Length: 326
Image 1 (cartoon, rainbow, N blue to C red):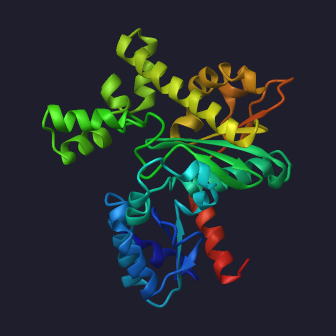
Image 2 (cartoon, helix red, strand yellow; image 1 turned 30 degrees about the horizontal axis):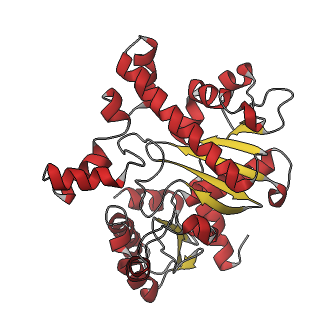
């Protein structure tokens, strides 16, 4: 119904761009959607059972109203297909890797791709010359190490559950914990998965997945909220350190996503512990930045910027590229 309203107001588009969460290793970039591509996308559902069906449902809904308009699929995983084998490979039995396509896929690729390009533009530098670490911090959160414009490592893995602490997701936990809960507490795989996806992260530590509420509670001295912020920051700083090892240093650190863009205190807490990487914040700039901007303190060797997440622009850019249009 909403799409019909938009079409009535703005008219028929030339192209449609779709965000598809998982492209596996089949789709390493944007692709024009046809019947064969649709079937391949459905075949990848097992790799992203929570997200892929929704993406495909949206695709079907739009196609029903715009059957003659060409459509392009852009993938959250595609940007990370350049990660080298050393970073992408899990040390699990070889038959698992081959039979189940187990590897680090990474997600939020559209955001990481856009932000690394936008950071270079903002600083008037060539992306190919930069070592960039992008921090997509929203309800879901991940980091990417971008070297010369290519992703070389990221924190999310085979699923979007790995890596940082998130609003309702645990991030990385000991796999032995999962096995212990199933073996000793007789929890089903579904129960464990639901808990780690929906009842963990900030909501488990502080009772809410909204970082604004967590920070407000911490300011009031709530010990659970204080711990939640400490855990979140510890995992974030450790992840940035790991990404800097993949890039060999940091020229630009990017904060984006709802938390990354709007929590000046989180940015300050994190960067305050990253001085060993040559990073530092200008307190005034950090507190007053509202749009894409540089918040670096004078004398820092690496730049820190805040960039608005614009996955929609990245999708539009990729759709135009597929069709050779400006």
